[in-house]
Length: 492
Image (tube, rainbow, N blue to C red; front, side, top):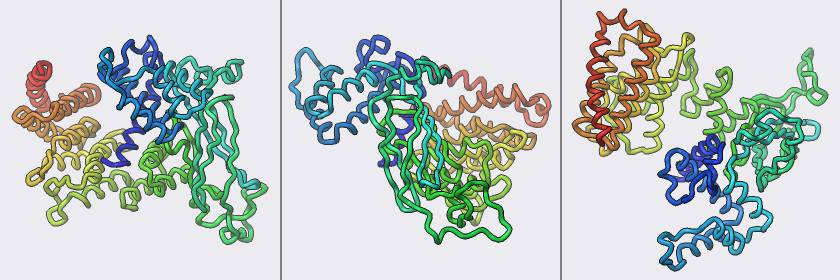
């Protein structure tokens, strides 16, 4: 559904491959993988990983040889006369390597390293990087530690100083660093994936802090202790997070290599990347990094809020902004209730579908879901109306039910649990009369009820609420229906 969707799916697939590519089972061409690789997408989990890895490897080759040369190889495969002994128009690794060398115009040394490293063995590079800005030289200094996803890597095992440190041949190619500065964007293809595991790179900044951006400190102010920082920076530069012309930095922005990248830059630079970079992968990377911060400051919450379109902050600012954003799109201002579903705006649909799940993950200081979060999810489920909408709301309802399973009920929120369970029961009945595609609605209900049951048995004294809430009766009734549902799914 567009370039953004394609890039995001490729990004998620590459992340999955890097996480799982840790054993010989993920090698594309080896006895440990499979004797016949055709149709590996149907051979379980590792088959899916090999399928994604194969796509990533071909994309890397396409980038190296260029679109025209890669197209010639594809034309050669498609136009090749069908052979009686070969039912599929496929190529062996050896044949493809020969075409890459003959048609793809790739140098033999590169191919000699590429295929053994990416096709015949396992493991992806793991790049851990941090930066420092040298104001005197106007340079960015990048410290890089290269590891591998396989457990046999000496870097991952912590043997940084042994002789095997330099024994890893690495991977062929040169990774690019993209620096966004005050005066523009600059690419630096300077990061080799082979050689020493530890590297220190220097990138020349093209932008300089203009004199008009620098003001002398007020009388009585103290310097920050460094030789070059006797002058105070302007509000603009303070907003950039450091006394430098840097806005944000990205590693391998075009996903030219299959690599797991851990890049550390100041929080403000991540915020700049989130707010100003239009690439969906850059936005996803920034959100992931900001989510992992030990403490979410108001500036982070504000940036995420600006990303949705609302800059205001309160104590539960994340929850308030999510709910307010959703209501501004889907609620009737006059009656204060959700309007009938309208899924014509596809990008907005996916954003709004994700909000109830995000709301269900909000926690108070005691690690419980705020009552507002429980009420919000129940309200959406209770007043869901798909009349007049040409699109099915099955996936929408499945996402709402999934968010119920993530809630952690407090003493006030537990009072709403019977209503939520009754809604799930109605959806199970509906799905039995009009089955959804692959039973996704029933599957979501089963998962949510299982999570609720586990949480209740572990943390909530159900007997205390039996008299007023009839939780036990509701769960028993649903349990009987679930056994019938599970039996039906097994038959399917």
